Amino acid sequence: MRLIDRYLLRQLLGPTVLATIALAAVALLSTSLSQLDIIVSQRQSAFVFLEVTLLAMPQLINMILPIALLVAALVALNRLHVDQEIVVCFAGGMSRWRVIAPAMWLAAGVTVVALVLNLWVQPAAARASREILFEVRTDLAATLVREGEFTEPAPNLTVYAQTIDTGGLIHNLFIHQAKSDGGATTYIADEGRMAKRGGKPVLLMHRGSNQEFSKTGVLNFLSFDDYVFDLSQFLTGEELVHYKPSDRYLHELLFPDMTQDWEQKNYRKLLAEGHSRLSTPLYNITFMAFALWAIIGGGFSRLGYGRRIAGIGAVAAAVRILGFVIQAASEDAVWINLLQYAVPILATGWALHGIFRPQAARVMRPRRAAPTPLAPAGAA
Image (cartoon, rainbow, N blue to C red; front, side, top):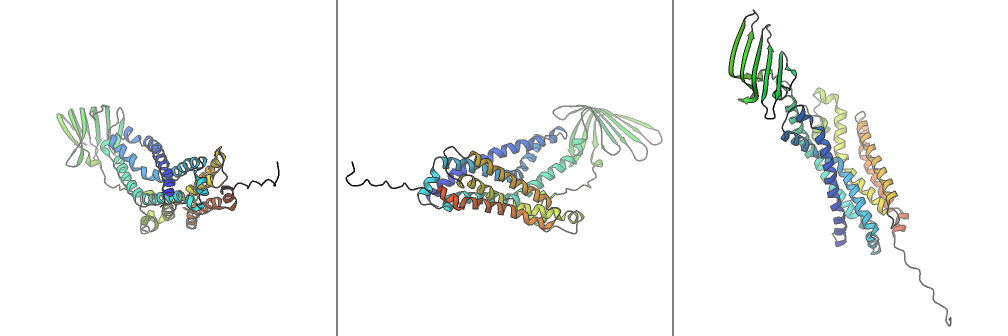
């Protein structure tokens, strides 16, 4: 790679990295706000909240990469063009392809990164996040007690707690368990705490009493200093983690197990997701081509290219929205999946045509100064 090519690539690479970091930070903040329910309602630790939030980043990065590439390329190319550095490249004999080659190579590299994220990183992260959320949702110990509320976390089980402090200590605990034979058992304790014994969830109760009513009407009363209430009896273990299309690897999307009922009913949805994984990285090249079209596809102007950039930006947004619409429509008809590839490819061709059209080439070609006419001999 020549010196001028490396220079142009460096001018594009820095803004691309900064734009990706900035947009990823915004996306991370938005995702973290939507995951606050994990801490508020499920009383999970901050580590679980942070883990679920970070595991969502591969999918978000895939969505923001084309936008970051477009924004960074517009900023960098606009500065190079206003400073006449691109004009100097043309004046030095570089072809249009030589001038845009570093930008297209950068877009191709980002496309490869996005493809790797789509095919391997995203499904692995999504599976890990799905398993964590499943454990949170089925964690009886976490949902058993809600401060100041009567809850029924399991059939025939009613629980109440007056307060729960920040250390997880439960105060003034009440548990009522109805039995299938008509009897019932009531537990009252001053304090309680969730724990695990032998890998099973238990509730450790302190300074309380146990009242048991048999079906014959006999009352048994027992006071205790410490009592271990086994919670594993309320865990059915029948629920399994179900992976959504966004959690599956490419071979599971394009070649699903048709012996399963869910895969048979959602075959088109799985195919649409699989083709989306392969086609969406192409938008990185498309958006880079749009940025080049906005700056190089027209004449030089010292006043900037605000109107042209706004128009190309609107076109890029419309193309990406069209891609989302086609992906949704692909869930109804398999043949529409071809359009998922056609949209970014045709849009890229349209942008390249705008860059290499003869009118644009004439506008960007440096003009030679007209020769000064010679004065006639003997003139004063």
